[in-house]
Amino acid sequence: MAQYRSALPQMENELFLTDGGIETTLVFHEGIALPDFAAFVLLNYPDGQAALRKYYRAYCDIASHYGTGLILESATWRANPDWANHLGFTPQGLAEINRQAIVLLEELRAEVESGRTPVVISGCIGPRGDGYVPDKAMDAHQAERYHSEQVGIFADTAADMVTAITMNYVDEALGIALAAREAGMPVAISFTVETDGNLPTGQRLCDAIEQVDAETVGYPAYFMINCAHPSHFAHVLEAGAPWVSRIHGLRANASRKSHAELNEATTLDSGDPEELASLYAQLRQCLPNLNVMGGCCGTDHRHIEQIAKVCKPLFRAVL
Image (cartoon, rainbow, N blue to C red; front, side, top):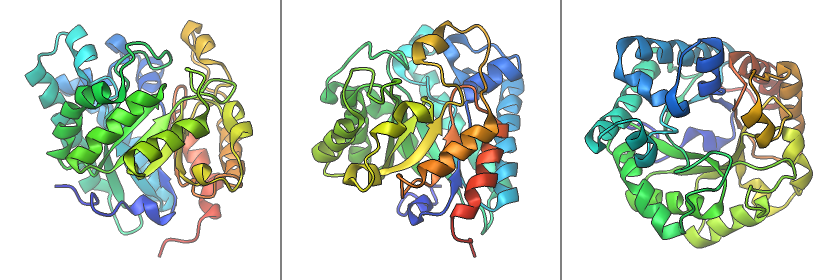
């Protein structure tokens, strides 16, 4: 059953780690083929489940070692109807795979959770279309209808919350927030930005966050930024601005490449874990509520361990 749905512990401003780039880790480091970059297909067979457990346990170990909280994000970024249909899943099979993803995280939570390491389970929701390009664009109500089934499935599991990751236009993010509100699920909204700090549509990050808040009466628990290097967005963060205080999470790329460059790359750019950790620490100066820290494309447990090492001293000790 859900443990923290009524009171997310990461809202208390202690450090919570989450994972890195699950798909790039599995493909480039583990040599596992992921059709359509869909990690959820691994839940269909024992070896795949073992690979996912191995992946998550690396982050469990880091959180336990440093005494931080941990958010376990389900491997369901692609587990929505369009992508699943392309991969041959029936609606019933898709529903079951979303449930299985949460069950796996429940088992991991039972292994690692302690007073020093509270573990939040999040149902991951990805974009209907491409992660970088706002294709298959919907208005907010269409997006609410499209994503409501996956949100509803998570609401019937032990998931404590849902997180919309790599949102590249505001209407889809808004639709997911509305679906979460209808289901009574806490939700975090994570936008991706281009090298100019704006969404791929050209909308400013501040305007996207303010629009979602205005049209949902501030329903999201918090906002995040993912799949962009800190140098791509640090210059748009306005110290002291109310919208900036709504950003609690960051899952950055270690690579400085643009989305277009990453799409064309044939090798993995893992950047520098120590440099990335240093940039996270610097961002705490203009993001006072930044306390959910993970990674995105190209990052792995090495990056998250460096982030824990550098950023844990910035938070008060957990008793």
